[in-house]
Length: 256
Image (cartoon, rainbow, N blue to C red; front, side, top):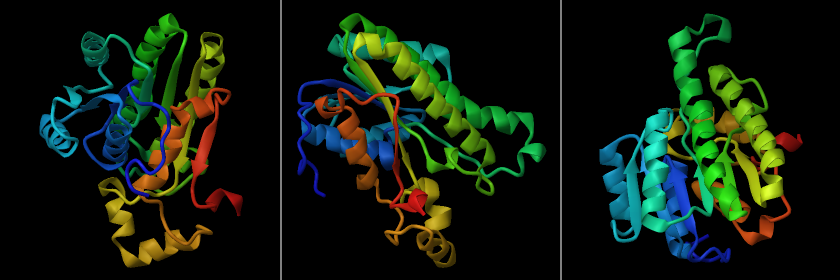
């Protein structure tokens, strides 16, 4: 699909996408620019953020904020900057995620455990909490989180990451129930392996790729576009009566 080939009716709305300097986050940001939204993005490293801004058309189109979402003070500053620039927030896309291959959970040291949970779970909590407090005042909003099928099944080397993503899905359900009276929908998208730099060690190895693709009925791994459009659907009016759900974007892997 090319940018703008599907219209979601979100023109002029204010979006914040975390972890938007590369991969899925950058692909989401690209499509949002095509859709005509007012866009803020964040990333932890300034150099990656600067490059993303260039790719997205420059700072007149995008508010770029350097922030580490696992740090409460950074999150508070980030949302303050969004409100200062745009005056409101209509949709938050929690995209930040990271994984370091881990030994068994029983052999994982506390520092590594905390690092993975800080980014994947605590950062999502901090951003969602800040967004919810803004959206409650407006009696409208969308919060969408990019999760992973790793939160649904145990995978070698992905144990701590999977635990964090499973918790993110429960966070999604709890927030959905709590925020429903305020007309705020909270959902998640859980892809299987996506062709990004994050997963390059897996898909760049032909033997590993073949093994992974064999377990997917559609016979391939996901591309970033496969994730982008489900995310945008959840931010559109078409999802107004859908909340607390996690949509598996896995080419049918969970069906067999």
